[in-house]
Image 1 (cartoon, one colour):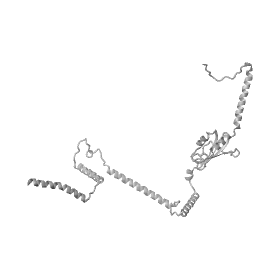
Image 2 (cartoon, rainbow, N blue to C red):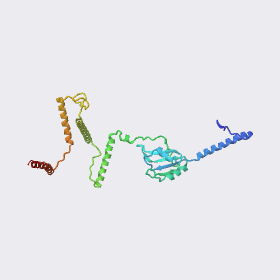
Image 3 (cartoon, one colour):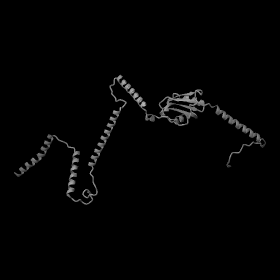
Image 4 (cartoon, one colour):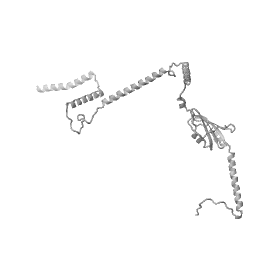
Length: 302
């Protein structure tokens, strides 16, 4: 078997005399094919789709991957809030051909997606804004996120406005509760300076109390544990080692240890108290055999 290696050779005519004409015809055919391909690409008009009621947990990559199964997605834009960065629940998708966009809008309209009914419809090219897909490939970054907005340094005017808003909210809540006939008193939403200082003092008192309780518990646990140091010969008592010397100090310590052990056992003991009638019956039963034995001895002696 012959093995063909290297680049493909140019086309050759059957008749060597007509070789020049053959090459001209091949070039013409190739030009026509390239023109048709260019014309086909130019004739494809892009179609834009509006997709609404999107779940908030979806990201750009997930939505684009889902809609790319219908056709090639050229551009995509998910609208987000400039302050928080969260999605607003609608997006715009641009497909390569308008026919594919129409098919997607028909199939995905009123489609249950993530416990929501999607709303899809095509947007005519006249109504598509020029800056709709501006910087669509750049990842979105919110200008002022919610955390920074909440923790920003405010002026006196801004603080006073916030207090007025909270006061209005508090009044509305109290009116609604009164209309419904609910007697409920809740603390004011605005804390004054004196109330703030009192709240901080109560927190400090609670913390000190908890620390004191923890220290007491630690002391109790240390008292229960018997400390044994290996240096002194009086305290070290091993079963295999030699017997310790019975000095008076050693005996006193052993007595104190035994007393402590007895006190601990008394706490753990459970005492059952019997009634007096039961005790009398037991004494009678125990006395009867002794009396019968004495009578037998007297009879035997007689």
